[in-house]
Amino acid sequence: MENLAKNEIIKDLLPRKFNATGKLWIGVLLSLCVVGLIAYTRQLSKGLVVTSMRDYVSWGIYISNFVFFVAISLVGSLITAILRLTDVHWSTPLTRIAEIIAVSAITFAAIIIVVDMGRPDRFYNLFFHGRLQSPIIWDVIVITTYFFISILLLYFPLLPDCMLLLKNEKKLGKRPNKLYKFLGSFWRNTPAQIKINECAINILVITIIPVAFSIHTVTSWLFATTYRPGWDSTNFGAYFVSGAFLVGAGGVLMAMYAFRKSYKLEKYITELHFDKMGKIVVMLALVYLYFNINEFLVPAFKMKKPDQEHLMGLFAGDFAPLFWFAIITSMFLPVLILVFKKGRKPLPAFIAGCLVVIGSWIKRYVIVTPTLLHPFLPMRDVPPSYRHYFPSWEEWAIAMGSLAGMMLIITVFARLFPIIPIQETITEIEQHENA
Image 1 (cartoon, one colour):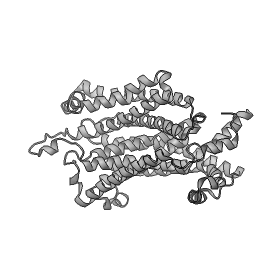
Image 2 (tube, one colour; image 1 turned 90 degrees about the vertical axis):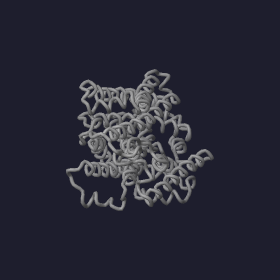
Image 3 (cartoon, one colour; image 1 turned 30 degrees about the vertical axis):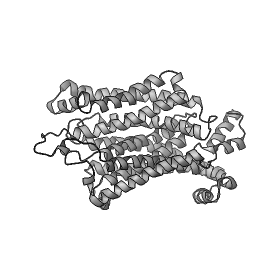
Image 4 (cartoon, one colour; image 1 turned 45 degrees about the vertical axis):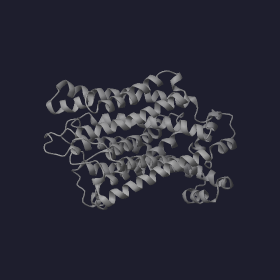
């Protein structure tokens, strides 16, 4: 890669128009989003009665999706902030991938919360009549803060690339060019601008780490501050944060492979990147496994009556298939694949990333639903629908539509902007050659 000419790097990394496969992918995502909007329109007109949520399961697949989105958004702080501060240069091609995942995920985390509200027109009450004693307000504050920091952390490193994009107007078309002018026409790449930009980025990467830890810790407190079996845990903060880093790293593995294949970026996202990210996923999976053991072993050892019913439901009851599938898929199988060098090649690493993401989504569902179906007071004289929960088609459509919306943002961003930072790549190669 050291011998690549500057013009060749720019040519390789410029955004490209969608081919037939890309257009089909966009069509599928848009279709899922439209179906989700239709389902949400039905929910708005008829109320939450179209869902399968009832008095007991008042949180369902929507909140599972919310926790998943918040979790995967933490990858921005892992790749961009932590690895940057530790002076890890190999992660440069992955920073923008991580940041756009973070921005798109946290955007839909906020949207899915509004969807979960029976009266979204009262959303403003959170801001005007919120109480600081409520963990919900803490969540609103940290999510909003994390969103704006992530946007800035995506935007500032993009400024030098906007200048390069403006110089290649003929290749990119007039419409994208207007966007590049709006975002970065003021950028001249002067030493003063570069210094200010680097200083701003350093401030953001330092700031985002405590905010990132706070966002998922506070999300865990939404559960842990309620006195219910399955949620009444002092381990929840670390349990949620470790799981968030794992699913975020798995999401990056998936995106790395997809962009590498779609845009032919083999020279930039190399097998070395898959090897190193694979090792990170193994470490994070083992850390998350430790917190899972800690989360379930202690209440299982004491086996208090309220916890007994909950744990038996997870380990051997109705939720056992989902629970064990999530544990095996998100932790054991990825470790078995990635612990071997051959398993850290692009394709097996991609498969391991898919397993992590799928298992982690199901894990969030298992965290939310079983506890709600095991209240302290036994269910008496209630309809059968109150004793079980399975999402209605409207809930599935909205949930899948939100996941498709997140991927749509990532796809459109990759069409408009370089998914690998061009200027940073050129600078690193020049520094390496001069060393």
